[in-house]
Length: 268
Image (cartoon, rainbow, N blue to C red; front, top):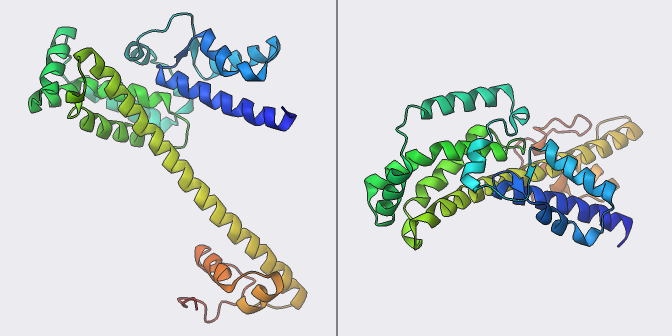
């Protein structure tokens, strides 16, 4: 494996192991870590760097995993330094509001789950209330990935609300918590992916505007005047449509291009 390919594989493995840790409530076993990086044949010092990376991201590496819901609930300080002050305040206030909700005992929660599995609407609503704090804790696992805590919690709550109506697909009430947790996590991960894809599109559009603006500046300096769309297209072998698209995206603010007649014009 070439050095470049090793770096790419190493980065992918880091993301893979972090994703696995999130799905397990911020915890891993040493065997899972070593299996993920097995193909890279890491030296001891390199593997220690991986463990340091995981520790810095609040991932616990222990021989025995704690139940996912318990691990999430116990991670009170998890990723707080990745939250902005505004997000931290929002989360604190949100959790305070949830403190006012009734807390179900394990027995009540199981009975409520069984009734929800049978389609009892009131039980489904009670179950939503019982899991709201879990949604907030799960959201903390995804902090610092470009999506606001408020949006993560909102998306998780939507998934929870849908999930409690789908519990009839499970055979035993003990399976329901895992199903709901997975639906909540999947919803948050999808939101992060959509946000990332949108940011990539915006960045590409901005890069295209900047490239065309730079080319227009260079030609304008050469001619000693502003250039027209047609002149820039002919000189740089760029389609006039691409230039006009860039002009619109920039808010008609590419100074080196003569914009007379361009505002509101239709592409031909």
